[in-house]
Amino acid sequence: MIEYREAQAADIDELVKLRLEFAIDEHQALGEELPPDQLLSLGSRYHEYISSHLGDGFYVFVAEEQGRLIATAALHIIERPLGHRWASNIHATMMHVFTQPEHRRQGHALRLCSMVIEKARAEGAAIIVLEATESGRPVYLKLGFADKDNGCVSMEMDLLPS
Image (tube, rainbow, N blue to C red):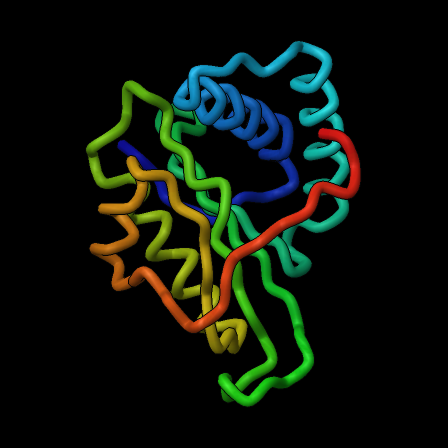
């Protein structure tokens, strides 16, 4: 039996393990290897972040089977200055959607993402955004996400080494 629920503080160590599996999976999909020192740093930083913020603007939803977390989806809520495009200054970002390989294509990500969307609505978010991999894109399209060309160009600048 699989239980879908919001993660609690007691789940933090398992959430960190899943986040590291997700990072390894992302790098492998790009044909890269995540160096052990970066993996260790990521685990430490994620543990620190989630320990401080879980349930306070950062929510994680999990699928659990026989006491083991098999899938996850996270939600980050932020308050932004009110702009002309939205009725609320609460914005949401869905992130860290990951299902362990042996449990993929069974609807876990779809169910967890639906829970994330409902939580964002409950928090009063005007918009929810995400960055998708090609493998995740079909799930997000099923949920109603759309490619967005709002006249802006997505750009970034690294300020610190990874």
